[in-house]
Length: 144
Image 1 (tube, one colour):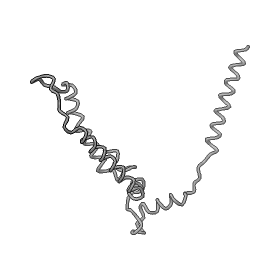
Image 2 (cartoon, helix red, strand yellow):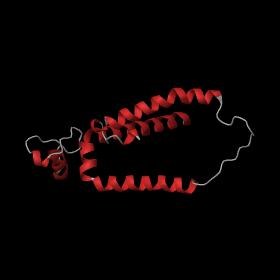
Image 3 (cartoon, one colour):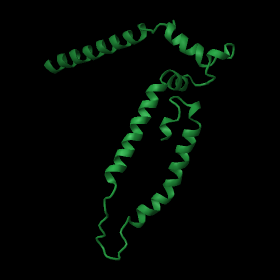
């Protein structure tokens, strides 16, 4: 009898929470009205009727990244290049130790073969994403 009561209580709680979640999901709709800032971005992204106020980009995310966040993107790439230059400067002058005199140091045959196969494929996909990034959300940043 006691297990039956526990089962009924647990089932009732689960059903009640499920009903509450369904009603909350069905009853809440976001506003269909576009806010003025979003409207300004969308009107200047691709508007052939106002050629002086358009960026002629079919992808609004790319237009916002390059036109409205241009300085932010510039400083992000500056920090990235400074990190690369710092890493190269720290690694300059470091000598390699040859542990095997006259021996062949390196990767195994399996790793070399997989690298030969996947390396060009990775470069081709990165070049494709980088060159066609103006048509995808976020631009070609993911190509890097």
